[in-house]
Image (tube, rainbow, N blue to C red; front, side, top):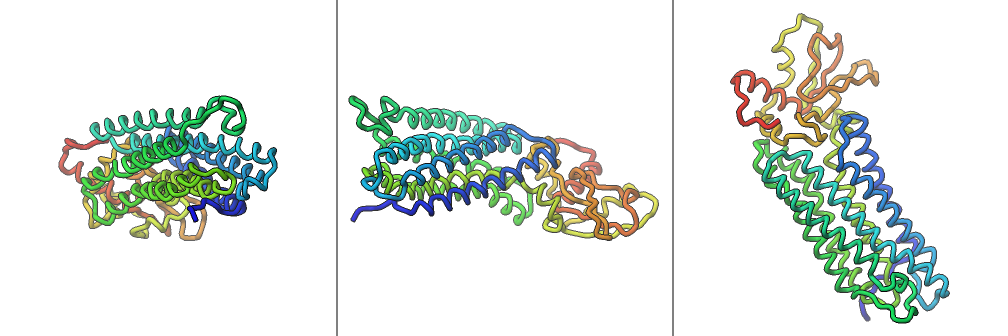
Length: 380
């Protein structure tokens, strides 16, 4: 007995809707962070928003396929249902490719916001060019897979013919996996060269390497892709390919959003990033007193500053976080840019100052620079 790509229609709807909902939450949180908190949206946010729209469109095409018989044997369906199912199947292929491509563009343009290195950026632009060519090919090869186009869902049209599904789909999947790997490993050497504590370095590398999970999903999808590329009973064998395609799209969106959510998490869950609480009292202001709140065993703020624009996309690493709250339990939070903490005389009696690791390191770096009176080698 050969391989089967069968799954129930209910499973297709459940997985695709659930994964799309998770992706939507991550994108909304990302936009809330970039637009509402750090107030610095960029082209990478636009691309991930478009990717989400294509993900929603892909989910709709799959729901329509289920409505018209996906998950059932083709010979049990009416001619009308077969036609109504193959049309959204055709649309799902090129919409899926557009969603994947927009996610890749979002990640790569996000890299350009974060990393200032000339060599890194040159490689990034080259990879963007490769993805652009790949995107154009996958889109047009999907839309015009058959001649005439209608032959895809009307195989009885005289003189019609289609591209070899197996050859085209597997070539596209192979390039997709290669570009996923290249995109995932691209920033890792940069992180490895930073003078950060190992725990922080590995944490950053892990967050950005999560894109490798998308690559794993792409590889797992190959088996179901092989089945549907060779299938004559499309409605019966397409469900698993549909499920894996949805998981791949939305996993990519989720992973691309994770590095951007630190400011949002810091605002609503400040204790997750708290390293020290300091109770302050009203006293004459001392320029050095504020710095006393920024003590740490690490002296690597200068290295982190070399990331250039920071995860928020700003030019001076202005990832924002909650650094002041009232002991009385009030929800009155003041947001300050990293490296610009509230002065002691600005805090009232009984207030608690919450200091994050990043704020500590940036402050220490600034103190070190002031003491040495040297700015050589710093990348803003």
